[in-house]
Amino acid sequence: MDMQPIAARPGNHNLANYEEKRASFDWEEVKKNFSWYETGKVNVAYETIDRHAENPDKKNQPALIYSAPDREEVLTFDQLKKASNQFANVLKDHGIEKGDRVFLFMPRSPEFYASFFGILKVGAIAGPLFEAFMEQAVRDRLEDSEATMLITTPDLLYRVPENELPNLKKIVLVGDSEKISERYINYYKETEQASEEFDIEWVDLEDGMLLHYTSGSTGKPKGVYHVHNAMIQHYATGDWVIDLKEDDIYWCTADPGWVTGTSYGIFAPWLHGVTNVIRGGRFTPESWYGTIDKHNVTVWYSAPTAFRKLVSSGVDVIKQFDLSSLRHVMSVGEPLNPEVITWGMKALNLRIHDTWWMTETGGMLIVNYPSMDIRPGSMGKPIPGVEAAIVDDQGNELPPNQMGNLAIKQGWPSMMRAIWKNPGKYESYFINGWYVSGDSAYMDEDGYFWFQGRLDDVINTSGERVGPFEVESKLIEHPAVAEAGVIGKPDPERGEIIKAFITLNDGYEANDELLEDIRVFVKTGLSAHAAPREIEVKDTIPKTRSGKIMRRLLKSWELGLPTGDTSTLEE
Ligand code: WTA
Image (cartoon, rainbow, N blue to C red; front, side, top):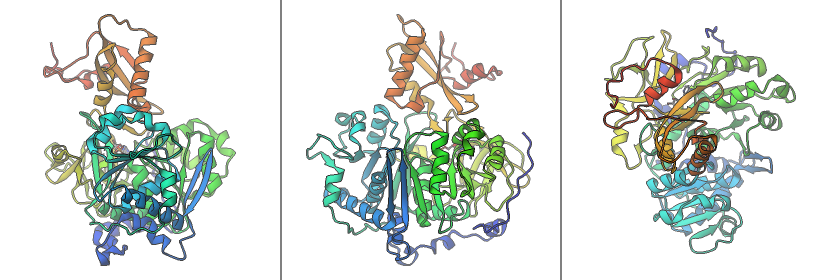
């Protein structure tokens, strides 16, 4: 679709002079906003929570508005400081130290956020997991990270294979449980007795803060390691892109199991001291519009998959709500369809601003600013302090309008510092000083970037990154499945759905019941979002002579495209 640019509305935008700022920008300038610029002592939990709690004008301002069907709760900065201090004391009592990995496996709740900051306050590294994960997904991540402590709920404990995780020494249970021993810690009992004062562990800017596991096209999920230094970028993009002002009510819909839910669901808004709405429970158009209406949300950050659902739910629903508080809307995770932008103009009377970045990049890199003209379908332009380009496979820059690897010049503050215990994988991201994203794109003559697709086999289903290898591995654990090849199949609402091609072992016959059983097997073993929506039984799965599944070929079959070079195909 070819659409006219949508001009920015004149207004009081935090970054009104983009081109000028880009030309003269220095990250050192952003650092001067922080007290550690003087002292050298740093902890992101202090900058996000305690700093505001110590400010008499801000301490009683709501920091967190938690809203779920069965629970509503407000915590001020002061209350969140005290709750996280209490949990930090509990962690310390149980021997958690700087650098230890402490994982969180639970739904969003006030306890989640208090625990998260408690972990950071003792200098430990937080590892948030989606509550939808099943046993294998939980095991892979706790095993690889060698986490010594897990915070979870009694309901989710059955998915934690404790006897296979020798490093996991303690489990904090948020909720009532019969389990009482040295190993199990009752969250409410212990935090209640803990002091509300805590001496924060001051760390170095390059010390660890977060581990986010994410999928590639091969192997198990990888631990993307982020350090406290990332706050510089979270702060800057909160200012320029999210356009946060002191009295905003901000809502980021992402779960903290995903990097959007930490970088922009936790750090950016609270570094700016704004009130942050956290919503629990399932998605329905009514409950989402209702959240904006009820809490007078002013700034909203969500994802194309959610916007598409809202588009298809129609205009009658939206008319039941007052959304006039909204002033700024952003999107991330998948290409933002121009149709959705058109819907935004009609339904919300606002532009939806696309932003591009990755778990590995830790923060936004290519974005649409409130102050810039939007070209619908484009991801926008790089933020000040970031150099983006399209490069060939040798890392040479390509001219405008030529498709190639979307790459970023090394050196932005929120870049991952390692792939956990996998230096080889980390190195493989870089060519010639460029971080190569794995996305293909082109840049037009005016410097706008346009996303084309993934260059590897990674699947993006409803904004979730799924590695085909993980799903294939689970599939072949099913007694009926001999071989499996998994691809992303284009889908109008979900972006892509997961489609599996399988061969069956002798003695099994393809029928609906068996295929459903296989689907449920992946769903209950790995996670719901990784379960194939379509399964097709084949006589053989195409492989290279070295035994690699040719997913590219499966995809061409599925889409009825030419099959291209098949010279490496096994006989
Ligand atoms: C895709 C963390 C198109 C892309 C935020 C990227 C996007 C991957 C966009 C990262 C966008 C993200 N337009 N595609 N605005 N934003 N992607 O780490 O393929 O879960 O490489 O995202 O999502 O996925 P991740």
